[in-house]
Image: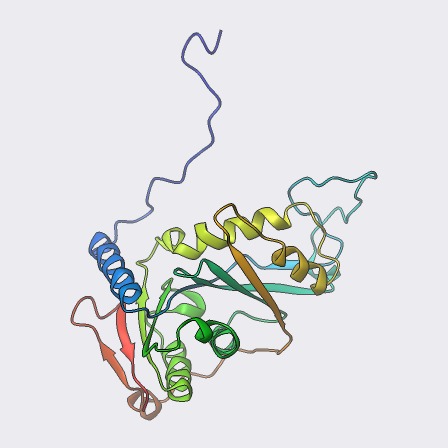
Length: 261
């Protein structure tokens, strides 16, 4: 009877924006041009973000897996019963269709993000871009990727100095993080690979993420970062003035470059 009257089962779709952001569409068009330009010059385009944090221990996780016995977990997800925290940070290379995931154990900070980027750049990513003279980073505008704060810029400056490479940054507008390529090119597949499995230890999480595959040939490399991070103190005005930041002429609040000092 329902089908005859035009009813069908549907899932809710997140299509109603909470807020209209000025220059939203212009920034999307600009990012699209940046990606094309960097790929044409054989320079890397990296999409960066931190996936949802998880508790380590015998806790319920949504999803089903094949098993002969009932999987029994705690009936409440109290952090005090956790054996640790899982902070999954990701880097997605748009040209190589390769994901680089880091499993952190403490906090999602700009230092944590830059340490992961440096590790993968030196050991993995740079091998595919021997002649790269600049790097494009696509990221959200909040949290450890804040477009307004200076902690991220300060860490990027140190990385730029060390690698001797120009770093271009483009932030997605507020309320637009789901369009960051890493969300639908890497995180959704990683999420599927981890569904229903209890995170008993960090090695289990690492192996699950490493098993992430897609028909398009996605490859995921994983490392564990055991360093303990804490919130950094605010930069002084003198420290801010030493940063070699070149704001874009187009929407400089979201787009800028950092050059080696």
